[in-house]
Length: 253
Ligand code: NAD
Image 1 (cartoon, rainbow, N blue to C red):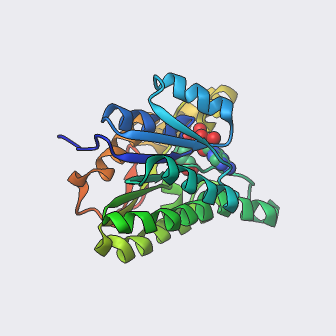
Image 2: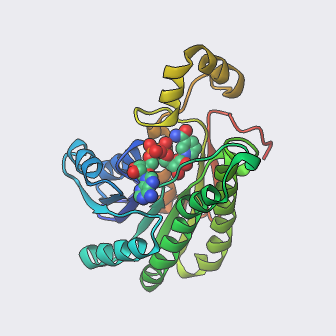
């Protein structure tokens, strides 16, 4: 299937590691003009080297609204327009609700939810002019159903809800908005690898009991779906939240 992503201007937040880096690689291999944004220059440079220099890097702390505005201004300044935004940066903190300070709830919302809302609002005005665009929010199965840490679960649920609201609002302008809800994805810098090192037997049990496919997912398995969703081959997918999880989610629909 020809995804026709050649030359498309793509921005991936949190693209220096893990799932974001795999998404960058997938778009690069489709011939897209790929940019990644993250906090640390060193990690960005490392990712760029791993991707044979075929990405543009932007340093930004996405929990800062000023830095989000600067990021989109710099991106548009360099690239002229934006075809695809992947809101991938995210992370979890805290523990049970009663033991988690309010500050951590605010931080989780800022990183997982407000950054995606704000960046989407900033790019939509450019995409409207072109009457073309795709926004993909990386959420989690633990936004569609209970599970994970409470701050994370709440923020990802809000992002899934925002995805549908914005999708219905901008599809008439030629912009598609969707989300991907990964299950547990194993990669070299993620949480799962740490947990496997700490408790290998416990993690084997977790996989056996929680993931019907019997293994963790890979970042490439998320990246392939992102590339398809961004392409015109997915033209009738609007406002969807797609589980990519080896059967891990317990929802019937
Ligand atoms: P990761 O921690 O390996 O990478 C996160 C990326 O986000 C990094 O590039 C990091 O630099 C960037 N980032 C974090 N905070 C930032 C900030 N304030 N400003 C700018 N960049 C920032 O995570 P991952 O496992 O690759 O996860 C990527 C996305 O997928 C996240 O949204 C995560 O919630 C979601 N997800 C992951 C899993 C999993 O099992 N790994 C499962 C479900 C959903």
